[in-house]
Amino acid sequence: MAMLEIHPSVARKALSSIFTSQPVMLAHINDMHDALTVVFYSLCRGDKLTTTGNNIEADYEVLRLSAAVNELEKDYLIPVNHCNVSTSSIIAGGKKTAQMYYVMDKDVVSRLQSEPDAVFQEQDKALSAKRWERKQKQTQKLIEEHGGLTGALMMLTRSEYKDKSLDDKELMELERKFRDILDELDEAS
Image (cartoon, rainbow, N blue to C red):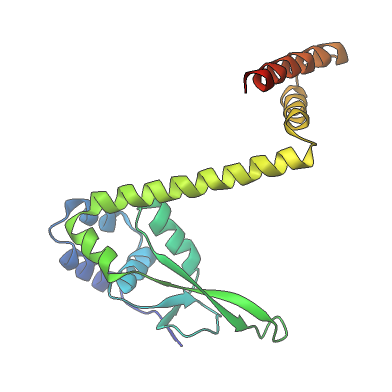
């Protein structure tokens, strides 16, 4: 598989031509560093990209591709499809492993040409939903690890006040207040 080798000036010129009628996209392109511009251009033209060292079928391989895709998605709110492929790994002794390639739908490119702000809003909403889901999982794990909601709150309280000069009596008073609040919430529900 070939390395992606496009000169950044060629990529910038081509992207400027693609998004000529969208000042917000032109501003994004001008703000991107050279390597990101090359990756974005390649995705816009429909190339299938994978990280260097993967042994899956793709048009090109790119060093540190996942970092570039992450930057496109989070900093520029440009959606990119992540596609997992199950394959055998030479490094893992022939065991099955998942490797990823990245593509961009032609529909996304068209929408970036016509209504980039709508695409950015949708991507921001999708990222927010993922962050919320991740936080819910972390909260659930915390609750499970500490024997329920009360235990988790007590652990968080102790953690928050550990650097403050509270004695055991003051910590017990905080714990009592939390328990009272939790009891009120239980009664209200």
